Image (cartoon, rainbow, N blue to C red; front, side, top):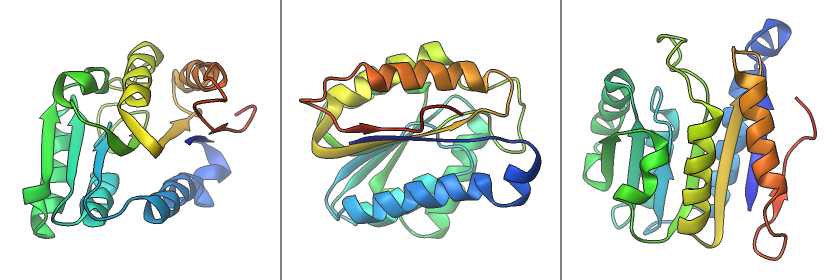
Length: 187
């Protein structure tokens, strides 16, 4: 299943929990699907919220690969998993998500994309549609049967609507025989 959610970084949406709502929705789906022993990917570590949850869900016999181009994001994620005593099941990779296939050679149960920029970081260092599409294609190839790709797209930031259109177009082009795709029709 491929589930794409979108939120705006502006106005009432942020005040009323829109951003937290997208993350909470993704976390609910992950809790339903990811089990101990699974292999999973956090394609955009950010502040490490998804990284920590995934590390908890895969248990001691599972593995998580976490990707980010920013050292700050990787450090924040490492601090979270270290504090929880889960670093033995986590491999953090200082690379863009478009390099998933360079590091992962086995099927994965879930791949999470929380697009945009690092909260509290430089807004000019944000994900871009062209690299996200490469990463999504690789994620679909790595996904095990019954696996899940979750994508949260924030349309209220600079470039967010364009990235949303790219991601939505990619999802709509997937073969319905191979993938169940759902996303809102417009941001």
